[in-house]
Length: 109
Image (cartoon, rainbow, N blue to C red; front, side):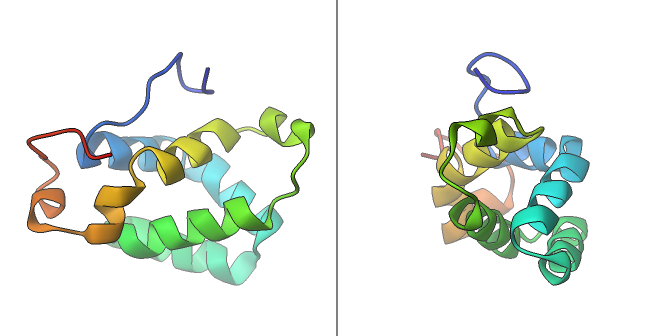
């Protein structure tokens, strides 16, 4: 179960972006906590520009830099960050024409 609903994974880039925007504050807090202020600024700029590649890169850096402890699961936004990195990452990484339209014709994983 995620912190935004049971098994409510993003299945399109539109849903992926909706989660990023909805949980922007929590994601920023996590980025700042584990990666740093500079990356938080870059994250916010990339979100504003709807540029998925740097958003995903910074979220991935945050995931890797976090401690491998059970308590991490209790942090607000952690489940969202994991879902954004693991469930929708292939589309954001490719930035194909299909992804850029925010209306993929098939699931993006």
